[in-house]
Image 1 (cartoon, one colour):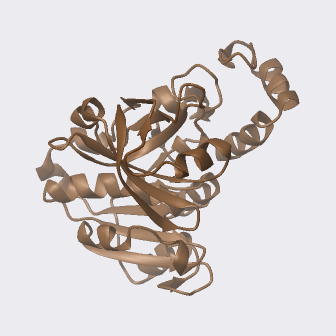
Image 2 (cartoon, helix red, strand yellow):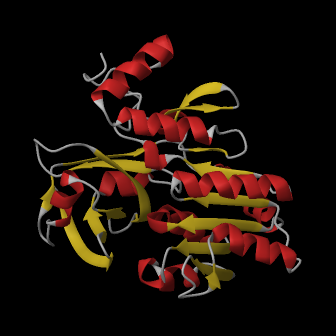
Length: 292
């Protein structure tokens, strides 16, 4: 059984859990995700891996309660267990395929927004263990919504905070912070952005203007997580991709964010799903039992 080993509240409606899942922990890599299910009747929830401990056989997940199923998850206590945990799924970050010596030559910036901080932390920790120093901008609406601050500080060379209300760090969003660093003469060879889709959209617009190649993660639009439902269908460089099986990471300059945002809104209603099926035809990939 997949026992909940530890449980911690990180902020308003945001929870961290360490769960015993030795097979997942033994193979997980930065950038991948897993699927959890509270019980036999529960929905399947895809969550990116925040951390893993191969020796202890445990994985760390961070999630926000946004619906009934994640609310049920938040009611699990230490000693309770999940019915299922499946993973690791998706493709690891491209960074894990590069030699450490090559990574050390690059000036890399991560941008984390909201609970997107969790998968960013996983990659930062892996790079830190390889001896690679990276910078990070962590953003939130207000100071109280920043999570994993101490953990992030331990694995970054420079950690910058940006809050919309100016309650902590730079006054403004992550784009404000990046522009400020750029104006101060700090340059980067690569940027990795993970967070809300709208945040990634504007971050990519800025990095393209500044000429910083950018990778983003579309884990936030996944529903089924196995390529069956078609919820995470998106256009990348004009080609149809699915975040769960082709990603979740993509070239941020190539992603059609407007299409992804519009599609996510339509997918929430039955009429919208029917319209998407009609518009997308054979590329719709509707095998979830709702659209088929």
